[in-house]
Image 1 (cartoon, rainbow, N blue to C red):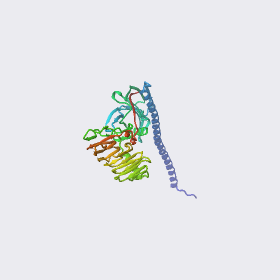
Image 2 (cartoon, rainbow, N blue to C red; image 1 turned 135 degrees about the vertical axis):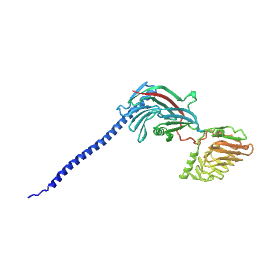
Image 3 (tube, rainbow, N blue to C red; image 1 turned 180 degrees about the horizontal axis):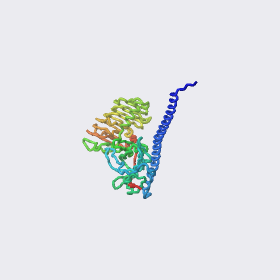
Image 4 (cartoon, rainbow, N blue to C red; image 1 turned 90 degrees about the horizontal axis):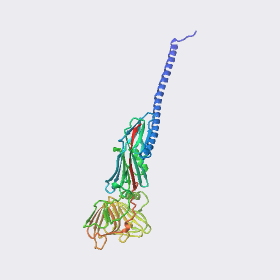
Length: 470
C-alpha cells in the first residue's frame, strides 16, 4: 500500500510556477538592462562618430576659408553637420587678438599693432564644441580645450608672420556654411604711413588672445615659439612675448636706464652719455652663479691672490685688496655679498668678470693701467655702487637696476673713470670726477641676451570673411 502527501504535490506545482515567473522576470530585467545600456552605448558611439565627422569637416572649412581669405577662391561651401545631428552657428563676438609693442625701458605700450575681434564658426553636439577661430580649429569638451588644426601663426628665424582671418556673418542652426571674402587683406605691420617698419630694433612684441579656448592657444604658443607665455585665467586670455635681439653695445662712458637718470653737480654730464636706454637685468644671472657655486664643485674657494683661470666664490663678500693674473685664461669672481676690494691689480691678456649680489664700493685704484674692456663688474638690483675719493676705476660697471653715486677727487689731471658705467640712475658730485670713454668697451661681450625668443621682422595682416547659411 502506497502513501502520498497531497500538500507536497501542491507545493511542487507552486515551485514550478514560481520558477517560471522568476525566469521570465530575470529575462525581462536583463533585456531591459541591455536595451538601456545598449542605447547609451549606441548614443555615445553615434555622438562620437558625429563629432569625428564634424572635426574632419571643420578642418576642411579651415582649408577652404584660407583659400577665400587669400584670394584663391571667391566662395567656398562646407557641409559641417551633414548628419543633421548637432548645430552650426556663427558667433561674431567670439574671441579677440591684440598685438602690442612694449617699450623695454619703461614697460609701457609703445605701439598697438592690432586689436581685433576674431569671431568663430561653432559646431555643437552634446557637451562637445568645435570652433573655427583665428585661422585654426579648436575643440572643447568636459576634459578641456585642445587644438585640432593650427592657426596661421608662423614663427621662424626671428620672423613672425600672422595673416589673421576674422569671421563674421549670421548663419545659425544649419548644416552647411558658405564663406566669401568680405574685404581684401589689410596690412597692419609693416606700415610705413604709421611709422611701423622692419626690422624691429627694440621693444617686446606681446601677442594676446582672449578666447574660451585660451588654454589651447597657450599650449600652441608654448610649442611653436618656446616663448614666455602668461595666462590670465580670470579673463580667459593668454599672452606670448617675443623680444628684439639685444645689441650688446657700450658706446657711452655713462648711460642710465632711467630717463633723465644722470644728475651731475656741477654739470654738464660727461660725454658721451645717454639716458632712457634699455639694458636687460642681470639678477637671474648673478643668482644662478651663486647657486652654482653653492651646490656644485665648479667653483674654487675665493682668495685675494689669483694666478689661474676659473671661477672663485666669495660667500661673505670681498673686503681686501686683490691681485689677479689672467695669463691662464678668464677669471670669474662670484661674490655673495659686498664687493669692497680696495686696490685691485690685474695682469694678463684675458678677462675678469665680477658677479656681485650686494654693494660695490670703490675708494682706491681698481685695474688702473689695465684694459677697460677686460674688467667687468655686474651688479644685482639689491646692490648700489659707490665710488668715492681719489679713486681710479678702469673697466665696465653694469648695474642697470641700481643707483650709482660718484664722488670723485684727486688732482685735476687725474681720470676717475675710464671705460663705461651703465646704471638706473647716476649722481655725480665733486671735482674732478673726470671720465674718459675707452672705445675698447664698445663691443665687450657680457652675454646679456635674454632667453626669450627673439623677433626682428613682423608681418601682420587681417582679412574679413563672411559666413552664411546654405
